[in-house]
Amino acid sequence: MMETAKSRPWSDLEPELLGLVLRRLSSIADRVRLRAVCKPWRSNSLQPLPLPFPWLTLPDGTFLNIPGGEIHHMLTFLPDATACCHCSIDDWLFLMSTDGACSLVNPFSKSILQLPELPKVWKRGISNPYSRISPIFYKLVVPSSPLDSAPDSLVAALIMDDDDCSTICINQPPTAPDLFRGNAFPELQIEDIAFFDGKLYALCGFGKLCIVHLKDLIISPPECIIRSLYNFGGIPESLSKVDTSNHTVRVYLVECGGRLLIVKRWFESIYDLEGDCVSVSVSVSEHTVALQVLEADLSTNPGRWRRVNDLDGHALFLGQCSSKSLAATECSGCREDCIYFMGDSSHPPYSVNPVFDSGVYNMRNGKITPLLPEAAATSAHHAGEWCPTWLFPPEIV
Image 1: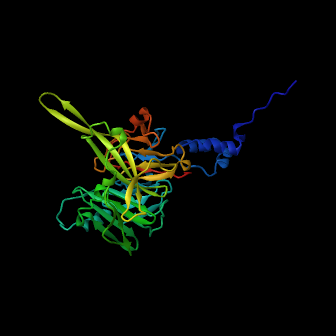
Image 2 (image 1 turned 135 degrees about the vertical axis):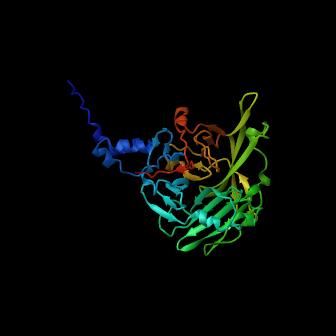
Image 3 (image 1 turned 60 degrees about the vertical axis):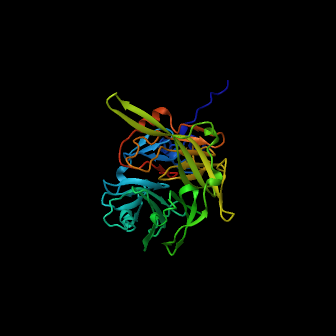
């Protein structure tokens, strides 16, 4: 008679099989749970893994896990109770307190990189000391990823104010910060910045691309190297038969897989009437209907923009406060040639639900699908003062 096969305990699961399971877990919380099952699983799971899927910061200071929809509370890392997030770089948050103190804080390692008080630096560029204009939006970029946490790290900041003017600030201690205010060259209308091949680029109005020269950390007037987007005028094919009179466009400048790209995001404005015959109010919301991607061809003089139909196997996470690309194979749950976007606004008060106008744009078929299941998207409705932005957790926490 054949002996009955004896079942082996789960703790004896081969490390190779455990690794296969871990690689399919895009949620950092699920990875932690798996490692907590038993000691053998914990010791055998310490192997190189793809990065977890990025989180979204919510306006109340919590973090939304995608795609599961779990909410994480991690406010113990805050330098003080008044600190609010204004943007992010990789797994670092740019925080500012009510007294103007600024820092980059890593909520996972608890590391802190002190920055100058950017509102005071910005104020230096205002010619009228009695002016009542104020900064409303910040974006920070660095020459390379991941961010170097050394105190003398180079950080560039784009500061937008409520006078519709942009300021670029460069900081690398111990050199004093320098700044360039866009009103000195109003025709530029700086809309976004990004580092590419060690150089700082600025995307300006009407598709102009400029190099921001940094000689001895002093900002020279930007040099225009691509004149305009006019040679790529027109609208996306999906909107070719649609009345676009109520559509708007937002542009993003991003580095992706060794290419410098513009992403044009097309919105349809939706008007809702509320009230009765005595009093009527109109609310306007924006809904993303199409995206276009253009690459900067810098091999000619002047350069030019050209359309691209893929991201060379990368995934792009898009946001006004933070954009980042990754090879899809390096991030669990990412799809090749897809753009993940959130509902973001550069003007406070920020949306209480940044996943309201979020989605995934597939460049291969031109389709937009939801970023989160409907139930998870509804749970992300959290009011607060934080700016929604992407946060990229490390492989292991």
